[in-house]
Amino acid sequence: MSQAVCILGVTGSIGQSTLKVLQQHPEQYSVFAVTAHSRIQELVQICKQYHPKIVVVPAAKVDELQQLLAQQHISGIEILSDEAGLIAVAEHPEVDVVMAAIVGAAGLLPTLAAVKAGKRVLLANKEALVMSGDIMMQAAREHGALLLPVDSEHNAIFQCLPEHYLQTERNGQPKLGVSQILLTASGGPFLNHSLEELQHVTPAQACKHPNWSMGQKISVDSATLMNKGLELIEACHLFAISEHFVTVVVHPQSIIHSMVQYVDGSTLAQMGNPDMCTPIAHALAWPQRIQTHVPPLDLFVNHQLDFQAPDTTRFPALSLARQAMQEGGLAPAILNAANEIAVAAFLQQKIRFTEIATVVEHTLNQIQNSAAESIELILQADQNARAVAQHFVLNKGS
Ligand code: NAD
Ligand code: MG
Image 1: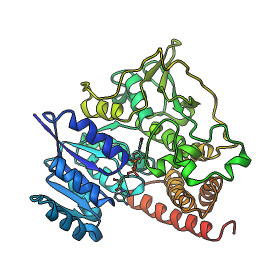
Image 2: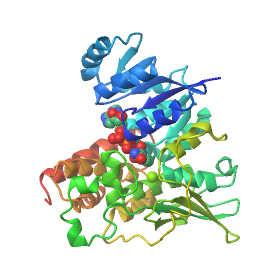
Image 3: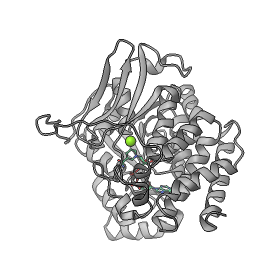
Image 4: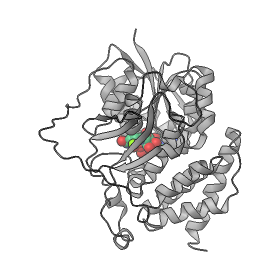
């Protein structure tokens, strides 16, 4: 029977790749609901091609969407708006699969709603899990949701772990013969830049990732290595493993997407051409496999695999994230919120690239950490951190 899919963030890079995979399997999947924050013209094209039953946009875009749909003679689509609309489609009884591909904290409540409704949730929106950690994982267990990683590294780790790994005790220790997780990082576009050179890089340079084509925010995060920091936290929650057992390995070619090491000396790696359609298809169909257009690796062409340790002097964001994970509580949510503000400020050329980590560190130092006991407390910490980070950006250094 066909599965009804809801794509949160359909106009984004992951949203587009998801459509690309679904397009190849029209008998297996239908697009039930899609959401977008901007790019309404593109959204209309998506409606034309996929005929979703429900579309969600910000309230301020509803009129524009209605007009464009009418111009294109597209009818029969229900339009919902704002966060209430996002939550409604995420937990809609007719939806089987939710692709969580909104960027940043804006995706937290819709993603959590999908989890609480017991859906198959394909998790691209790592910020949602970084912020809510144990609460999201606990909700998935309580409500029988299948939370499957789309982030290429986590999808790779999931593929390399023993079959029933996620159903075993969650105590922070590796188990079933696993000894550690090797989280690979491309190193981003500035892997070999000096600290001095990093002071002067531009948003356009930061957004030009050598191996992946992604949204602006994650591209900047990849350049600072904050992306790897967020992924470290994401891995700890998904795989119930303490950060102590997750080692970051810089692998510039992005052919190995991550590895799992075992006590007997084995290292399992998942490899493939860097294309998000592979992890998306894997999470959609798991435990089955479905076809994508991604060509298989040609090892006679993709010859070299290099590895090195990350340099946390030039890329301090990674250490800040590891520290936040060690501290636990609200620290990861504070880190994430401050980073979102700092990245936006860098993209608007209000701060330098190297100041992104400064803003995050300052915010973490300013806000008292406490236990992340509820979503309300997490959202409060997110708001506080945004205010502190914003203030620091506007009055730089004071
Ligand atoms: P993107 O910027 O290309 O797309 C973001 C999507 O979210 C868009 O559809 C946009 O309309 C929507 N959106 C933005 N702000 C919103 C808001 N306030 N409310 C509701 N919707 C909003 O981003 P992306 O690269 O597709 O990344 C999406 C998520 O997936 C991020 O969390 C990112 O870290 C993660 N991810 C992306 C990749 C990748 O290759 N692009 C890989 C791994 C993980
Ligand atoms: Mg990733």
